Length: 139
Image (spheres, rainbow, N blue to C red):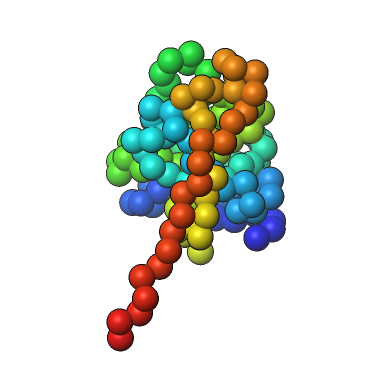
């Protein structure tokens, strides 16, 4: 996947285009308290690479802890669309499931240690890998 890709929340109130840094190669999850509950797979994009087509005014900001990361959700349907990263404020993480033609059900997704955040510890650590193994077709 290269170039700009269209994305939207579940209800379509928030629609955007984004140019990803390296397609889905940057797909990841995180173990911090919010990401663990949210369960989304995020892919990376430079901070200025997102353009809102509709619904920017429908986005709700959520912050916690150090108040550095900025997590955005659609105020109508509640879907997380993207966040400005704490570990790199010049980068955003985009919810892969919001991007047209993409699925968060990748064969393998790296899971970063967000409990021991790299901004606090000085190093990025891998917490594990999340595997998706499709069920065999019973048809």
